[in-house]
Image 1 (cartoon, protein in one colour):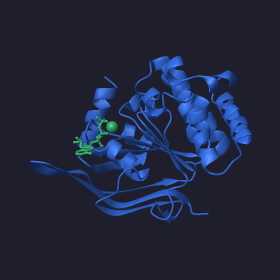
Image 2: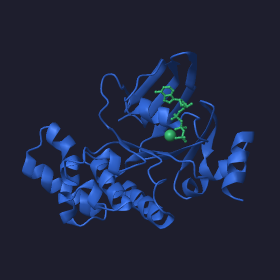
Image 3: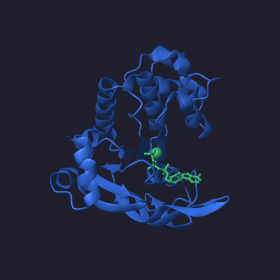
Amino acid sequence: MPENVLDVRDVTKVFERKGQPSLRAVDGVSFSVGRGECVGLVGGSGCGKTTIARLVTRLIEPTSGSIALNGRDIHESADGVQMVFQNPAASFDPRRTLGQGAAEALINAGMPKPEARKQVVALFERCGLPADFVGRYAYEVSGGQCQRAAIARALAPDPSLIVLDEATSALDVTVQAQIVSLLRDVRAQRACAYLFICHDLALVQGFCDRLLVMWRGRIVEEGPTAEVIASPKHPYTRELLEAAFV
Ligand SMILES: Nc1ncnc2c1ncn2[C@@H]1O[C@H](COP(=O)(O)OP(=O)(O)OP(=O)(O)O)[C@@H](O)[C@H]1O
Ligand SMILES: [Mg+2]
């Protein structure tokens, strides 16, 4: 089995815009995520974090460069990666229950419905939701409960990587801590890797093994979380730290 779940090599994404110059949202970015590793991607608004998330989950195509999952180009197979979004309610179809949403990937992969349902109930319980939540709709649960359901849905296909784009940013601080603790438990059990996108350095500090600092489409600094926080090398990292720990 390849050592890295994700290898991003020299990836650039240029957006063409009508009547405006094109925008280089991601500019020659390279990084890897090891098996079971939790990597934080931090940086200010508009620096290209969500664009990276969308590239890695194949929602958009890079202008140049390559992306491999478990050693295989994502064009061969994008299996193995799942995403959790900032706004959990909007990520569920309002006409379908949370359980139906979470079972979809399993049923599409050919699992018989009763078995998929059973697995989803187990995943909901694993994520701290009572079994009857599978029958609820996104608008019938709190933001934190909905994010738990989104994590259960992401876990259903047993991914080797979950990309979390500001997955806790819309939640209040107590709920944020509960979600991070759930993610930590899940990782301990499943050896699932995370690309944890977040602008809150205080939150990534206790959670991520390694940090990537992004600035204007580039990764300007990377290293073990404690090292980056204790002795930031790039001026932008220092700026981020000052803003986070005043
Ligand atoms: N589809 C698109 N077309 C044109 N420009 C885009 C598109 N998507 C993103 N951009 C631009 O690319 C840049 C990077 O956007 P991105 O959403 O990746 O930033 P971000 O780091 O996630 O910011 P935030 O912290 O605010 O979520 C921004 O200038 C944005 O306006
Ligand atoms: Mg974003």
